[in-house]
Length: 465
Image (cartoon, rainbow, N blue to C red; front, side, top):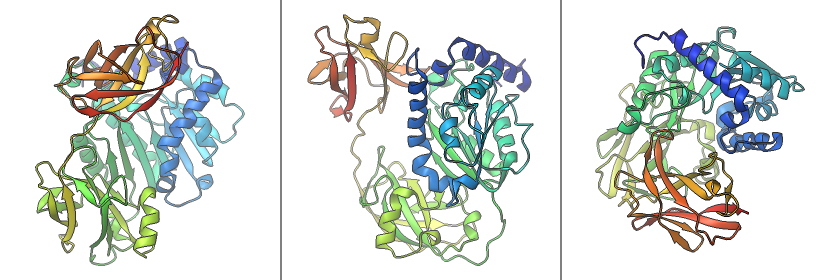
């Protein structure tokens, strides 16, 4: 624990007190830090955008092919119901929890006309009021990143597991940043504790959970999906066989880089019967790439962006396929690689050839753009609002060599030298600060970040008058 004198309950009480204060001060901003003053329409629209990113693309995986109107959904950390309204439009029964009674009170009032939602204030360490084995889907976004102690995180996940029914899914966001600068930061109820990939994998084993996927390990946005098994034994000896491969982000790309953000390999496997996949997961299955063992980040149903290609190209029913994603281990040479999968019982697939290519240096990625006044997303020309004309740009892909000498910000055709470049513990990532030029015109433009010879993809930037 981060304090030797505080118990779990005392930590939970501190979280409850802090989040009640935040709810009373400005609930919308603390839930959605886009701008200080938000209308109901703007706030609801931000929840709809989160649904478009976090839920809708993976809806078939989360529901496992069932009608969502027949499912019971638990939302952990609902705040004042930013996503809750949109979840209730999809799922039949929605239960939403929060440690803050003040947040829950506002959520109940905001969404009082929606009959399929139930709100619950929790202790901060468990979900004691909820029944065992009840929910088909348990979901938490942007919550555990604010929890200051790992034991509190584990306590919540364990009890969330209790209320998940056999066959149900639990999808959670945690902070996985292990950078020394962040590890040394005193944790509080805003900048919470790191929960590493190894800790997630260990907890999944301890729970007896099927670890379906773990994305974003090592970053501030680590997403874990666990499934509660319904069986503990397979029906027959498997005969696994790799049928197809591609780069994980694009089923049409067959050359996998040996490093960088795209160094992820997807494999599609046949020969696993309908029962055995419950025993196979991202903890128990191993990928061997040129005889080097790799733990996959995903093992499960075919992900939606691969479905069309597999239907057209393989001719197998999708429910007879197992889909796997794994990273290319550092130091792997380009060329033809021999890839095999190894199952928990020792069965190994025949070797399969995969084409690897030399890695290209990863370009920086602009994650968020905020102003220095209230950290809102509204950026203004200097004469209109000085502090809102200084941009704080969160960037993925920078490293300890990044500084004001080798980083530039390109605003339209104008190249600007930043005033600050460095790792910021509050966001657990690198930030680039830049002042808009005095002669900048209001309107829609583009924004890029240059790091040496590398340049990010452009993002649209609206500069307001």
